[in-house]
Image (cartoon, rainbow, N blue to C red; front, side, top):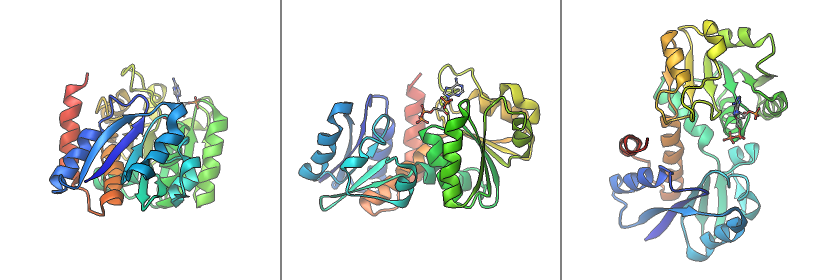
Length: 284
Ligand code: ATR
């Protein structure tokens, strides 16, 4: 039996163990794998990563606050992890540790499969410029999104994400919320995605409250937040006639890609979604 798991701090609220163990069961791999949460303090990251080699752990997810901190202790990064300098999956190939970033791929797959939208050639407005924005923007650029507009409270961070997207081949521009051009950009976007924690807690906040008149029914508005399933932003967008997409799909598909990387087996996403939805019912 091989061990899988997730490194984070704190970790007790992570939904990945339920989702991944449901996937292991549905794929008939219960005799081969088990997935456990590991609460890793920041000062222990180096020895935690080294323990993967020593104990023969097949792989782990990596979440906040370790996505960047694990990098110096890995042997190799895939292109996406290299582009955003953040890792959410480690795979142990005979003691060689390879870092991947499947967050952005998860978002793209959710766009395609849950919302039925192909990002190629689209104009996308990204709200926020933290780690999640970086993964989502790089994946959008790799998937052929034509025009990325990054809007952030702090414009400097938006500019640095723009640089990453441009290196991959997209047009990218940066704004802060006070720029006059923002209203026009919101109205012109095909896809809008909130990558910030605004709307997570307290749940009655939305970055677009002052811009609702610029939303229209030809747009898809998405949130990477999955709890609540419908954030205030998504509710506002739905009221304006937009299509909406919650962050649940991104969480499921980043995990599905991780599962495939560890086991070599296509992930049973239907069962992963069911496990996630059941678990979400139990959290307040
Ligand atoms: P993560 O790595 O999870 O994306 P992060 O790096 O802390 O987290 O980034 C959080 C993002 O949410 C940033 O874009 C942040 O804006 P700043 O770069 O200006 O800090 C944004 N954010 C968080 N709280 C916000 C708020 N109340 N209003 C506007 N933006 C907010």
